[in-house]
Length: 178
Image: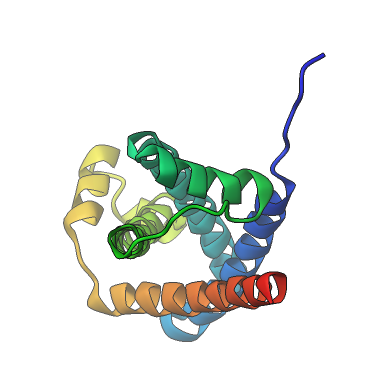
């Protein structure tokens, strides 16, 4: 008989995080980018699913490179929902914070370009105007184009949604370890 461990706490947390981030980001997109409500929700849900997939792939790849104690620390939280008691030193904490900051900035970049590509592929007005140009040329143009207002909006949306999720995690940790 084999034993199967289903990481229920992290699945529930991920669903909650997606719900919160999608709601907050759609609201910010509606206020700042002036898309319709339906388009904002669709864009927010799509880019959040893409960025969540990116985070998991990045995290699993990075986890393979970690030393055994850090691996145990991360995997105990992912699989069991609580941190395994390992000796923490300042170097590990600083590396952990740098990795989290890197992930935040990479997610902002993925969502920034993701919303551009979504708008390119799904907006019928843009498709009619640029039908003469090939799809790869249009994607290349979108990838090198930088709209500072949109970039600031994506950053603000991510900062708000991630801050809210971090607050929920901290409240949960305080209740658990108090």
